[in-house]
Amino acid sequence: MSWFESFILGLVQGLTEFLPISSSAHLRLTAAFAGWHDPGAAFTAITQLGTETAVVIYFRKDIARIVSSWFRSLTDRTMRGDHDAQMGWLVIVGSIPIGVLGVTFKDQIEGPFRDLRLTATTLIVMGVVLGVADRLAARDEAGGRHRAARSRKELKDLDVKDGLIYGLCQALALVPGVSRSGATISGGLFLGYTRESAARYSFLLAIPAVLASGVFELKDAGEGGHVSWGPTIFATLIAFAVGYAVIAWLMKFISTRSFMPFVYYRIALGIALFILVSVGVLSPHAAESAG
View 1 (tube, rainbow, N blue to C red):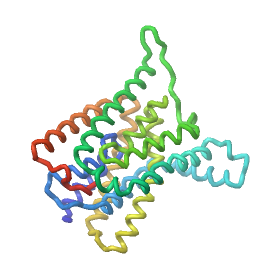
View 2: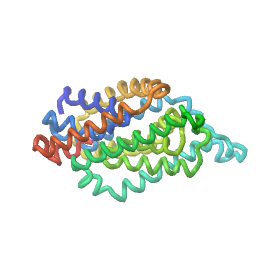
View 3: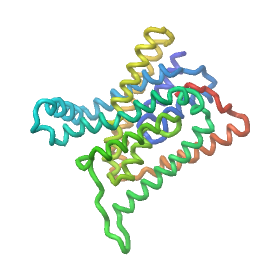
View 4: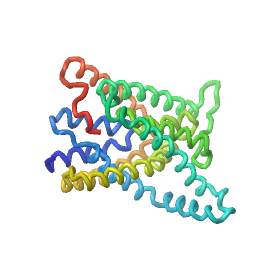
């Protein structure tokens, strides 16, 4: 892998990891259009360590508070009703589905699920799902002629049932094109949470799964020696810097705007991908492991 390839792929990873448009699809399509060799699952998982480090730093105060309260609740019964301690447990509960399903369907995820026609389908379908969820949120916030505005839930209202549903939504991102943030944010909006709360919990919930995946791939890469470490580390740093800027921008954006621009983009990209595959410009299996 060249330094230029690593720069572009790191940039794509940082730009798309937190937006509800699927980073795996964009990494795959970038490699396919450029005619580059497959960067591999290890490269992707390691660069995700960069974007997740951006999450940890951006939400460092929340994370420190949650981790501290959770550990204290293990020995102090009076802390078990604390919201931050409960959030620690909810992140753990929400991380179970993607871990179980990731192991169970590992062969399918690395094989049939990587067909670009399936990626195009998930881009469109999940785009529609996100659009419907966003419209429901907007209707609650604005009310109507015969309907009063209705307040939506905040993170303090999160319970075990909602945490598990969030986790199941996150597990859908095992299929390329779904988008981890898109699926979990959509789930949160359908559950009645505000856009900001849905996005915030989506980012927090991703930390254990992505860090575990990255560390696992890091271990295998170290043993196998199949990773170009210089370009990979460079791409990870790029992904971290760009990812941090994207988080800061997105949290401000959704405080006053809807997710509809991402919905239109997903649908347009999915349709374009179907056309390109159908006319033979792209093979359904191009850059198959890029994401």
